[in-house]
Length: 230
Image (cartoon, rainbow, N blue to C red; front, side):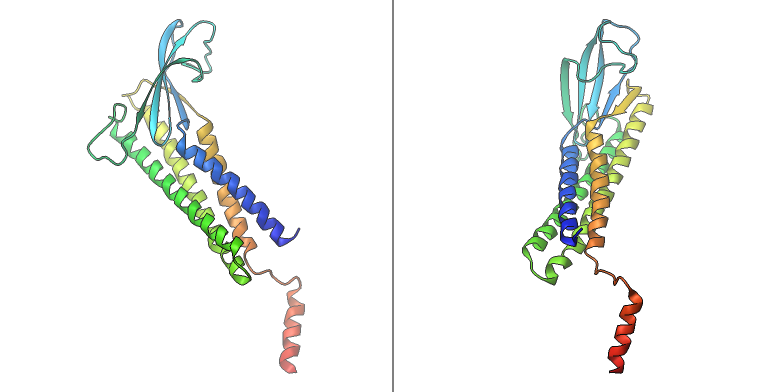
């Protein structure tokens, strides 16, 4: 396969990774939290949250839709929903749900790191645009920083995922919350997909931008020695 074809495929995969990561950042279904349901035909309080807000949902659990596997849910069931944005950058002020300071710090960290990931994606995209419009060696040269930026974006996505995972774990273990069960939802899956695609394809793009090694180094060395003799 030709080198330029491989680069085009890498760029397409990077676009898919960027779309997944952007979707994860702007949506709020990273994790779904649920209390233990001991009685049916009652209303329970489930929640789902992302980097920027947490939504509580009051769901009526009847004997028909009750499932031990889902607890208070699934979250797609109809119910009254109340969403609260996290005031990440307002010191001294906590929203209704963010009276738990440790949890607030975790989400601030995850949100800040995800912003770094988006920034690296923007820088990588600018390098790719410069590479597409450039000519000669300058076109291939810009692929190197583009690959590095996308790999860094993938690393930031991974760190944000791990911080969010610790955030969920800390919230479940806290005695101040009613939620004891959880599962990661589709926004978290989008972030995982974005991490894998951005990191691996960024490394691949960096390798593709490197000068091609000679197929037979010994013949190249012999040719160089003959030229020196002449």
